[in-house]
Length: 281
Image (cartoon, rainbow, N blue to C red; front, top):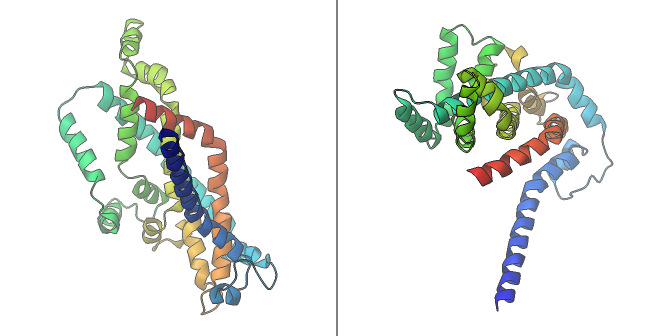
């Protein structure tokens, strides 16, 4: 009976995972394959594969119309900047919350945790834009980077939990050797938290690269600051009055490539960070 139950459970888990894989991969496959269709064939539906031939010119049209070189550069600069800021701020804040005692620590932590469960979404866009306009950053790429970086609450908590799993005896040994708090962080803590920092970096890069609403709002007054994600959506109405879905899907397929490249080079550290966090947390 035990073996039968274990076998049934394994079968159920396998079916569930297969369904999740299908639901995850199907939209991507549909978008990639749809990018090779004509607009009429795509909107009419009916067939999964192109019936009138594979139209590679959709990619050329998308690349030219969206000015991919310019907007890809914007996306790379903005995403990398957000990633660097997120890694620096979350690592420092996580270290301080985990190792130091100061006035208001519990209150700040309560606010951090509480705000994570409040989904304000687009409601915060106007206050953020108004604040950046007051500071004179609403027409500046720095303002957009700061708006996308945000408060890093979840990243700070991830790093804090990881730092708390590191024995404090290492800090004490470093102090005996003459290290200041900065020496403890850079020489002892930083090398040990690289896996979780890789997770923070990859998540931040992905979120910044894929963001649409915030970037669209922040770049209304400065179209030259648009990212690739915003430019791809604009392709839908770039040629004619009718929606050019095939060109937009071609642009979206191209936009997927950079994030896949980043994950390809960072996946080992990413998996190590998730695994270590699961064991230590």
